[in-house]
Length: 125
Image (cartoon, rainbow, N blue to C red; front, side, top):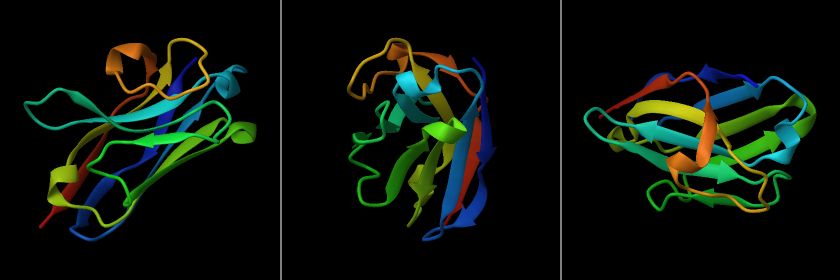
């Protein structure tokens, strides 16, 4: 399984960006998917995740009400819509697949075993 990401870039505070991640293979719909980010000099942190069906989503407190995660299993795609961006949202964003099939969303980076290539998101003030 490979994860390819699209989107990212630079935007001013208050702007929006959309990240997408497309998975290869036939097992995409069985696993929860997560988005993580890593700021310079910091560890990788959970941003948002969606369970296998798309019915359940989890968000970090810092992005609740601003970010929306969704998935389209027919297209093997998971998307992160980021609105009202803040400078503190700056970082490298990664999509990842949970390592085991579970009904809920997990938030620990060590619980995900397949990672896409990171994409830079820069929010200027």
